[in-house]
Image (cartoon, rainbow, N blue to C red; front, top):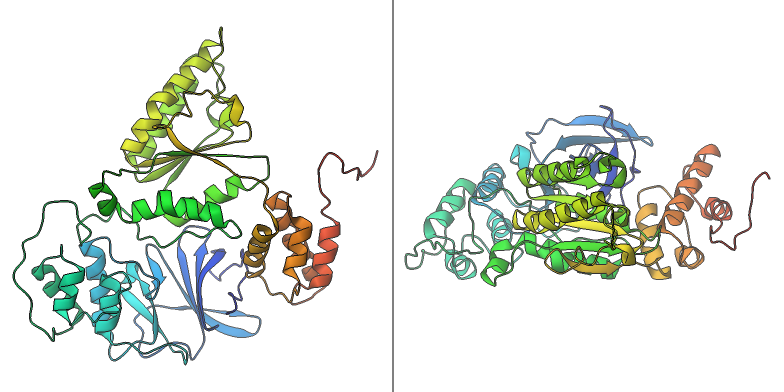
Length: 454
């Protein structure tokens, strides 16, 4: 399946710039993250949509082809990828959107902000009834029809008959089986529908080319916050702090940025340039303010960049500034986790950091991130090339040549190849541009002797 025809940075007619594509379907429909944090749904014009459409579409032309698009905040996702609803309000929004659909559904994108579906025509998708679509949504992907309420009750035992009946009524779906025995709602933590909308619905996190790091974040962050009730029942609270350590250019910052984007939470940055002050107590005050703001906006993320710059070891006779700053972090990090703030630190000098900061309970995990190998670089290159027109034929060979170098080198090669193709008035990036770009991106290891000028 090909990626989106729209490259990252493409500017829509209203000035909004597109980021990466999160969904593509049969080369007729795409979802892009936008640079201002919204989602853009783009469909090929004129034959990709089914039936009447209540959404107000804008039009654009790109590479001689017509498209329509809408911009929305909140959840914008293919119904086949939606996790189960995290709240009664979210389920009701889905039900109201479903009530306006007539007939069966081939493929659809749910736009929560407008309580509507973008219905897509496709020869490859299996037609589903409204009840089948709603059943899969309510149960998180189980192939069950929502009008089979007995089966639905077995899968959702902590959801009351009244809740299920109300949702089916809103969606316009008549039960084909009677409700079972009456069940009372439980006051214990559960995995059914509840009334908190504070947690964004999350699918699996994917970091191109970094399978192990992706798996770690999914297991220790994403899965926990996506199903907090289930983990709370086992005594597992909000994720503790995480430190990513490794050489400069190994992709720590990129990994954290993608995770924050996936979570969709507000993020707050602490770095030496923003909080360091020569005045007594001033740095500690700034640190305390950032943590306080993050806790007010929870769930949120606090990112401590180059943490070795101001959390270095307290030696005998250490400056009072340093001791006070470390003490402030020692207080704030556990408090942040208790108030649903994820703290992520980054450093390339893990040995320089005070041992008290790195104790479990403050930072539960210290993860080493090394320069990427060939397989990891290939994954990143494929993700980068997916967003630009190209006919590059040998990604594995290119990945071999960029292995064990900073991931920024791979990004530079793709970006430089794109510039060369544009300069040559070409419609696609090819092997020639990639080869030239690679020759202009020599390793910057100490043994590299390439110089310009003196």
